[in-house]
Image (cartoon, rainbow, N blue to C red; front, top):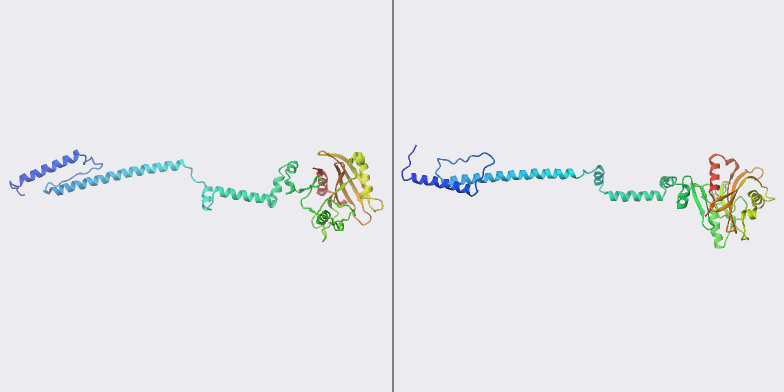
Length: 347
Protein backbone atom coordinates (compact mmCIF):
# COMPACT_ATOMS: atom_id res chain seq x y z
CA UNK A 1 0.00 0.00 0.00
CA UNK A 2 1.28 3.34 -0.94
CA UNK A 3 0.48 6.82 0.41
CA UNK A 4 -0.36 9.63 -1.96
CA UNK A 5 1.61 12.73 -1.44
CA UNK A 6 -0.10 15.82 -0.37
CA UNK A 7 0.54 17.35 -3.80
CA UNK A 8 -1.15 14.46 -5.71
CA UNK A 9 -4.19 13.94 -3.46
CA UNK A 10 -5.96 17.16 -4.40
CA UNK A 11 -5.57 16.34 -8.09
CA UNK A 12 -7.13 12.88 -7.68
CA UNK A 13 -10.00 14.29 -5.70
CA UNK A 14 -10.65 16.91 -8.35
CA UNK A 15 -10.55 14.29 -11.08
CA UNK A 16 -13.14 12.16 -9.31
CA UNK A 17 -15.36 15.15 -8.78
CA UNK A 18 -15.10 16.03 -12.48
CA UNK A 19 -15.99 12.48 -13.51
CA UNK A 20 -19.04 12.48 -11.24
CA UNK A 21 -20.10 15.81 -12.66
CA UNK A 22 -19.71 14.44 -16.18
CA UNK A 23 -21.91 11.40 -15.38
CA UNK A 24 -24.60 13.63 -13.90
CA UNK A 25 -24.47 15.79 -17.05
CA UNK A 26 -24.91 12.73 -19.34
CA UNK A 27 -27.90 11.52 -17.37
CA UNK A 28 -29.56 14.92 -17.32
CA UNK A 29 -29.18 15.39 -21.07
CA UNK A 30 -30.62 11.94 -21.88
CA UNK A 31 -27.45 10.24 -22.90
CA UNK A 32 -27.92 7.67 -20.19
CA UNK A 33 -31.14 5.59 -20.28
CA UNK A 34 -32.41 2.83 -18.13
CA UNK A 35 -30.98 -0.33 -19.66
CA UNK A 36 -33.30 -3.15 -20.74
CA UNK A 37 -30.90 -5.72 -19.52
CA UNK A 38 -29.06 -5.75 -16.26
CA UNK A 39 -25.58 -4.36 -16.61
CA UNK A 40 -23.13 -2.75 -14.27
CA UNK A 41 -20.60 -0.15 -15.11
CA UNK A 42 -17.47 -0.86 -13.26
CA UNK A 43 -15.06 1.98 -13.28
CA UNK A 44 -11.88 0.90 -11.74
CA UNK A 45 -11.34 2.66 -8.50
CA UNK A 46 -7.76 1.92 -8.86
CA UNK A 47 -7.46 3.64 -12.26
CA UNK A 48 -6.49 7.20 -12.19
CA UNK A 49 -6.81 7.59 -15.97
CA UNK A 50 -9.88 9.77 -16.57
CA UNK A 51 -9.80 9.32 -20.33
CA UNK A 52 -9.98 5.53 -19.95
CA UNK A 53 -13.03 5.83 -17.72
CA UNK A 54 -14.82 8.10 -20.17
CA UNK A 55 -14.04 5.74 -23.09
CA UNK A 56 -15.41 2.79 -21.14
CA UNK A 57 -18.60 4.70 -20.47
CA UNK A 58 -19.00 5.63 -24.14
CA UNK A 59 -18.56 1.99 -25.16
CA UNK A 60 -21.29 1.05 -22.73
CA UNK A 61 -23.63 3.63 -24.26
CA UNK A 62 -22.90 2.27 -27.76
CA UNK A 63 -23.67 -1.27 -26.66
CA UNK A 64 -26.97 -0.08 -25.19
CA UNK A 65 -27.94 1.54 -28.50
CA UNK A 66 -27.15 -1.68 -30.37
CA UNK A 67 -29.34 -3.65 -27.96
CA UNK A 68 -32.19 -1.16 -28.37
CA UNK A 69 -31.95 -1.19 -32.20
CA UNK A 70 -31.90 -4.98 -32.23
CA UNK A 71 -34.95 -5.10 -29.99
CA UNK A 72 -36.82 -2.63 -32.25
CA UNK A 73 -35.87 -4.62 -35.35
CA UNK A 74 -37.15 -7.85 -33.81
CA UNK A 75 -40.44 -6.16 -32.96
CA UNK A 76 -40.82 -4.82 -36.52
CA UNK A 77 -39.97 -8.23 -37.96
CA UNK A 78 -42.52 -9.86 -35.71
CA UNK A 79 -45.17 -7.34 -36.77
CA UNK A 80 -44.27 -7.78 -40.46
CA UNK A 81 -44.49 -11.56 -40.17
CA UNK A 82 -47.91 -11.31 -38.53
CA UNK A 83 -49.14 -8.89 -41.20
CA UNK A 84 -47.90 -11.13 -44.02
CA UNK A 85 -49.55 -14.11 -42.42
CA UNK A 86 -52.81 -12.20 -42.12
CA UNK A 87 -52.70 -11.11 -45.78
CA UNK A 88 -51.81 -14.62 -46.88
CA UNK A 89 -54.75 -16.02 -44.96
CA UNK A 90 -57.10 -13.42 -46.47
CA UNK A 91 -56.00 -14.37 -50.01
CA UNK A 92 -57.30 -17.66 -51.40
CA UNK A 93 -54.66 -20.28 -51.92
CA UNK A 94 -53.95 -21.27 -55.53
CA UNK A 95 -56.03 -24.20 -56.72
CA UNK A 96 -54.68 -27.28 -58.40
CA UNK A 97 -56.02 -25.86 -61.70
CA UNK A 98 -53.97 -22.70 -61.25
CA UNK A 99 -50.85 -24.75 -60.56
CA UNK A 100 -51.49 -26.89 -63.66
CA UNK A 101 -52.01 -23.75 -65.77
CA UNK A 102 -48.67 -22.32 -64.61
CA UNK A 103 -46.86 -25.56 -65.30
CA UNK A 104 -48.26 -25.64 -68.84
CA UNK A 105 -47.37 -21.94 -69.23
CA UNK A 106 -50.92 -21.06 -70.21
CA UNK A 107 -53.89 -19.14 -68.81
CA UNK A 108 -57.63 -19.73 -68.31
CA UNK A 109 -58.34 -17.42 -71.25
CA UNK A 110 -56.08 -19.38 -73.59
CA UNK A 111 -57.55 -22.66 -72.38
CA UNK A 112 -61.08 -21.36 -72.95
CA UNK A 113 -60.26 -20.17 -76.48
CA UNK A 114 -58.57 -23.48 -77.31
CA UNK A 115 -61.45 -25.58 -76.01
CA UNK A 116 -64.02 -23.37 -77.75
CA UNK A 117 -62.17 -23.55 -81.06
CA UNK A 118 -61.75 -27.31 -80.83
CA UNK A 119 -65.43 -27.72 -79.99
CA UNK A 120 -66.50 -25.61 -82.96
CA UNK A 121 -64.25 -27.59 -85.28
CA UNK A 122 -65.58 -30.87 -83.90
CA UNK A 123 -69.19 -29.73 -84.33
CA UNK A 124 -68.52 -28.27 -87.77
CA UNK A 125 -66.96 -31.51 -89.02
CA UNK A 126 -69.43 -33.75 -87.16
CA UNK A 127 -66.43 -35.40 -85.48
CA UNK A 128 -67.34 -38.91 -84.28
CA UNK A 129 -70.97 -38.09 -85.05
CA UNK A 130 -71.08 -35.54 -82.23
CA UNK A 131 -73.16 -33.00 -84.15
CA UNK A 132 -75.65 -35.67 -85.23
CA UNK A 133 -76.03 -36.85 -81.65
CA UNK A 134 -76.55 -33.28 -80.51
CA UNK A 135 -79.26 -32.70 -83.12
CA UNK A 136 -80.98 -35.89 -81.97
CA UNK A 137 -81.69 -34.16 -78.66
CA UNK A 138 -84.05 -31.74 -80.42
CA UNK A 139 -87.33 -32.44 -82.14
CA UNK A 140 -87.36 -33.19 -85.86
CA UNK A 141 -89.52 -30.13 -86.48
CA UNK A 142 -87.14 -27.76 -84.69
CA UNK A 143 -84.11 -29.17 -86.47
CA UNK A 144 -85.89 -28.89 -89.82
CA UNK A 145 -86.68 -25.22 -89.15
CA UNK A 146 -83.04 -24.54 -88.33
CA UNK A 147 -81.90 -26.18 -91.58
CA UNK A 148 -79.04 -27.95 -89.81
CA UNK A 149 -80.26 -31.38 -90.94
CA UNK A 150 -79.43 -30.29 -94.49
CA UNK A 151 -75.78 -30.14 -93.42
CA UNK A 152 -75.57 -32.84 -90.77
CA UNK A 153 -77.51 -36.07 -90.26
CA UNK A 154 -79.94 -36.16 -87.39
CA UNK A 155 -79.70 -39.65 -86.02
CA UNK A 156 -79.82 -42.05 -88.98
CA UNK A 157 -81.32 -39.60 -91.47
CA UNK A 158 -80.35 -36.51 -93.40
CA UNK A 159 -82.61 -34.08 -95.22
CA UNK A 160 -82.71 -33.10 -98.86
CA UNK A 161 -84.36 -29.95 -100.13
CA UNK A 162 -85.29 -29.31 -103.74
CA UNK A 163 -84.93 -25.55 -103.75
CA UNK A 164 -86.07 -25.01 -107.33
CA UNK A 165 -89.50 -26.61 -106.92
CA UNK A 166 -89.84 -26.28 -103.16
CA UNK A 167 -89.99 -29.71 -101.53
CA UNK A 168 -88.08 -31.63 -98.87
CA UNK A 169 -87.78 -35.17 -97.51
CA UNK A 170 -85.58 -37.37 -95.33
CA UNK A 171 -83.34 -40.16 -96.54
CA UNK A 172 -80.85 -42.53 -94.88
CA UNK A 173 -77.61 -40.74 -94.03
CA UNK A 174 -75.52 -43.34 -95.87
CA UNK A 175 -77.41 -42.95 -99.17
CA UNK A 176 -75.79 -40.87 -101.91
CA UNK A 177 -77.03 -38.92 -104.92
CA UNK A 178 -77.17 -40.44 -108.39
CA UNK A 179 -74.10 -38.79 -109.93
CA UNK A 180 -75.16 -39.48 -113.51
CA UNK A 181 -78.41 -37.64 -112.80
CA UNK A 182 -76.47 -34.62 -111.57
CA UNK A 183 -74.41 -34.64 -114.74
CA UNK A 184 -77.52 -34.98 -116.89
CA UNK A 185 -79.19 -32.09 -115.11
CA UNK A 186 -76.14 -29.93 -115.67
CA UNK A 187 -76.18 -30.83 -119.34
CA UNK A 188 -79.91 -30.10 -119.54
CA UNK A 189 -79.31 -26.64 -118.11
CA UNK A 190 -76.60 -26.05 -120.71
CA UNK A 191 -78.88 -27.26 -123.50
CA UNK A 192 -76.96 -30.50 -124.27
CA UNK A 193 -78.64 -33.56 -122.80
CA UNK A 194 -77.58 -37.16 -123.23
CA UNK A 195 -80.28 -38.72 -121.11
CA UNK A 196 -79.01 -42.28 -121.62
CA UNK A 197 -76.39 -41.56 -118.95
CA UNK A 198 -79.09 -41.09 -116.36
CA UNK A 199 -81.70 -43.55 -117.62
CA UNK A 200 -82.47 -46.16 -114.99
CA UNK A 201 -84.06 -49.58 -115.20
CA UNK A 202 -87.48 -47.98 -114.88
CA UNK A 203 -87.36 -47.24 -118.57
CA UNK A 204 -88.94 -43.84 -117.99
CA UNK A 205 -88.02 -41.03 -120.33
CA UNK A 206 -88.67 -38.40 -117.65
CA UNK A 207 -85.56 -37.00 -115.96
CA UNK A 208 -85.94 -37.09 -112.14
CA UNK A 209 -85.30 -33.89 -110.25
CA UNK A 210 -83.51 -35.86 -107.51
CA UNK A 211 -82.52 -39.49 -106.95
CA UNK A 212 -80.65 -41.26 -104.12
CA UNK A 213 -79.62 -44.81 -103.37
CA UNK A 214 -77.29 -46.97 -101.26
CA UNK A 215 -73.52 -46.66 -101.66
CA UNK A 216 -71.93 -49.12 -104.10
CA UNK A 217 -75.05 -49.58 -106.21
CA UNK A 218 -73.88 -47.49 -109.17
CA UNK A 219 -72.10 -48.53 -112.33
CA UNK A 220 -68.98 -46.90 -113.78
CA UNK A 221 -71.12 -44.14 -115.31
CA UNK A 222 -72.73 -43.31 -111.96
CA UNK A 223 -76.11 -44.75 -112.91
CA UNK A 224 -77.93 -46.49 -110.07
CA UNK A 225 -78.12 -50.26 -110.56
CA UNK A 226 -80.18 -50.82 -107.44
CA UNK A 227 -83.90 -51.47 -107.19
CA UNK A 228 -83.71 -49.73 -103.80
CA UNK A 229 -83.90 -45.97 -104.21
CA UNK A 230 -85.90 -42.80 -103.72
CA UNK A 231 -86.58 -40.29 -106.47
CA UNK A 232 -88.60 -37.15 -107.13
CA UNK A 233 -90.14 -36.38 -110.51
CA UNK A 234 -91.47 -32.90 -111.30
CA UNK A 235 -94.00 -32.72 -114.14
CA UNK A 236 -95.02 -29.29 -115.43
CA UNK A 237 -98.65 -29.29 -116.61
CA UNK A 238 -100.27 -27.40 -119.44
CA UNK A 239 -103.27 -26.57 -117.29
CA UNK A 240 -103.30 -23.79 -114.73
CA UNK A 241 -106.28 -25.11 -112.79
CA UNK A 242 -104.99 -28.55 -111.84
CA UNK A 243 -106.05 -30.04 -108.49
CA UNK A 244 -105.65 -33.54 -107.13
CA UNK A 245 -109.29 -34.26 -106.44
CA UNK A 246 -110.69 -32.03 -109.16
CA UNK A 247 -108.48 -33.48 -111.90
CA UNK A 248 -107.53 -36.98 -110.71
CA UNK A 249 -110.54 -37.79 -108.54
CA UNK A 250 -110.24 -39.80 -105.32
CA UNK A 251 -106.91 -41.33 -104.18
CA UNK A 252 -107.94 -44.75 -105.56
CA UNK A 253 -108.90 -43.28 -108.92
CA UNK A 254 -105.68 -41.29 -109.04
CA UNK A 255 -103.68 -44.48 -108.34
CA UNK A 256 -105.30 -46.28 -111.27
CA UNK A 257 -104.46 -43.35 -113.53
CA UNK A 258 -100.84 -43.46 -112.33
CA UNK A 259 -100.62 -47.20 -113.03
CA UNK A 260 -102.15 -46.90 -116.50
CA UNK A 261 -100.04 -43.99 -117.67
CA UNK A 262 -96.69 -44.43 -115.93
CA UNK A 263 -96.05 -47.50 -113.80
CA UNK A 264 -97.66 -50.35 -115.74
CA UNK A 265 -98.89 -49.16 -119.10
CA UNK A 266 -100.33 -51.65 -121.48
CA UNK A 267 -97.70 -53.73 -123.22
CA UNK A 268 -94.99 -53.01 -120.64
CA UNK A 269 -95.11 -56.52 -119.19
CA UNK A 270 -95.57 -55.08 -115.69
CA UNK A 271 -98.55 -55.39 -113.41
CA UNK A 272 -99.29 -52.98 -110.56
CA UNK A 273 -101.43 -53.94 -107.58
CA UNK A 274 -102.74 -51.23 -105.24
CA UNK A 275 -102.43 -52.03 -101.53
CA UNK A 276 -103.55 -48.77 -99.96
CA UNK A 277 -104.39 -45.20 -100.99
CA UNK A 278 -105.14 -42.17 -98.82
CA UNK A 279 -105.35 -38.39 -98.77
CA UNK A 280 -103.27 -36.39 -96.25
CA UNK A 281 -102.82 -32.76 -95.33
CA UNK A 282 -99.12 -32.06 -94.74
CA UNK A 283 -98.55 -28.50 -93.72
CA UNK A 284 -100.75 -26.46 -96.03
CA UNK A 285 -100.58 -28.90 -98.95
CA UNK A 286 -102.97 -31.74 -99.74
CA UNK A 287 -101.23 -34.95 -100.85
CA UNK A 288 -102.19 -38.39 -102.13
CA UNK A 289 -100.20 -41.42 -100.97
CA UNK A 290 -100.28 -44.82 -102.73
CA UNK A 291 -98.75 -48.11 -101.61
CA UNK A 292 -98.52 -50.82 -104.27
CA UNK A 293 -96.63 -53.85 -105.63
CA UNK A 294 -95.20 -54.22 -109.12
CA UNK A 295 -94.83 -57.59 -110.76
CA UNK A 296 -92.18 -57.32 -113.47
CA UNK A 297 -92.55 -60.81 -114.91
CA UNK A 298 -90.80 -64.13 -114.59
CA UNK A 299 -87.29 -64.32 -113.09
CA UNK A 300 -87.38 -60.65 -112.04
CA UNK A 301 -87.86 -59.77 -108.36
CA UNK A 302 -91.14 -58.07 -107.58
CA UNK A 303 -91.02 -54.52 -106.27
CA UNK A 304 -92.94 -52.66 -103.62
CA UNK A 305 -93.26 -48.90 -103.60
CA UNK A 306 -94.89 -45.92 -101.95
CA UNK A 307 -95.62 -42.85 -104.06
CA UNK A 308 -96.68 -39.46 -102.73
CA UNK A 309 -98.01 -36.84 -105.14
CA UNK A 310 -98.71 -33.15 -104.64
CA UNK A 311 -99.49 -30.16 -106.84
CA UNK A 312 -97.95 -26.71 -106.72
CA UNK A 313 -99.49 -23.56 -108.12
CA UNK A 314 -102.07 -25.70 -109.95
CA UNK A 315 -99.65 -26.22 -112.82
CA UNK A 316 -96.97 -28.58 -111.46
CA UNK A 317 -97.23 -32.18 -110.25
CA UNK A 318 -94.50 -33.35 -107.86
CA UNK A 319 -94.16 -37.09 -107.15
CA UNK A 320 -91.86 -38.81 -104.65
CA UNK A 321 -91.44 -42.59 -104.96
CA UNK A 322 -89.67 -44.94 -102.54
CA UNK A 323 -89.08 -48.35 -104.11
CA UNK A 324 -87.27 -51.55 -103.06
CA UNK A 325 -87.51 -55.30 -103.71
CA UNK A 326 -90.65 -56.72 -102.12
CA UNK A 327 -88.65 -59.09 -99.94
CA UNK A 328 -86.82 -56.21 -98.26
CA UNK A 329 -89.97 -54.55 -96.93
CA UNK A 330 -89.76 -55.88 -93.40
CA UNK A 331 -88.35 -54.87 -90.02
CA UNK A 332 -86.12 -51.80 -89.88
CA UNK A 333 -86.01 -51.50 -93.69
CA UNK A 334 -89.80 -51.20 -93.83
CA UNK A 335 -89.63 -48.48 -91.17
CA UNK A 336 -86.94 -46.67 -93.13
CA UNK A 337 -88.90 -46.67 -96.40
CA UNK A 338 -92.09 -45.47 -94.75
CA UNK A 339 -90.25 -42.69 -92.91
CA UNK A 340 -88.90 -41.34 -96.20
CA UNK A 341 -92.36 -41.30 -97.74
CA UNK A 342 -93.92 -39.76 -94.64
CA UNK A 343 -91.35 -36.98 -94.48
CA UNK A 344 -92.09 -35.66 -97.97
CA UNK A 345 -93.69 -32.22 -97.97
CA UNK A 346 -93.74 -28.94 -99.83
CA UNK A 347 -91.87 -25.91 -98.52
